[in-house]
Image (cartoon, rainbow, N blue to C red; front, side):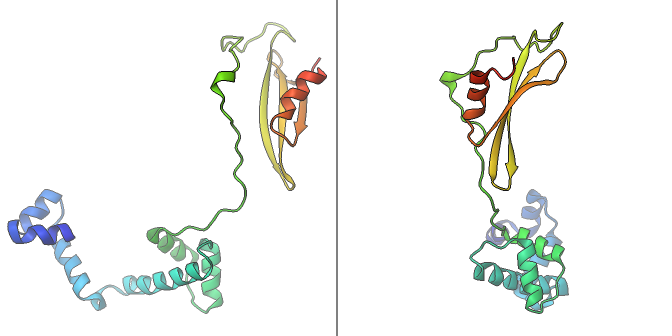
Length: 182
């Protein structure tokens, strides 16, 4: 409410609140809470204390802990709090844990090497082996990602050939070289 504090001397609380679509009682309530923090609700006071504890645990753990780990650490320290409360307060505070794992780059765009549209986006066939299309995906495994290339017969919708590789470049090249699908 700093804006209202600046403008209230010149224009008054009522007109400024009216322009901002805020009830004057809201302004006065915020003023009272700011000047008398001990008169705030028990939940608000408890939340303030919990925010300090959450921030402490978060900072002590190099700002990598998420909701679950912060909550578990608070329980270990004897601070009984619901997990959803920790989640709510961390969201209000803008705190988030670090996500594990490596981000996979699935698309490497090269505009100059874009494949042409040979079927004019018409994926229909009147008989088997008239039109094949290729697809490419990746699968997460315990040892990392593997990449799978498929050749699909459009008429029947079944996989005619496939290759798996640990490299993103290899499966399509292997399909072309081996003629596995023929």
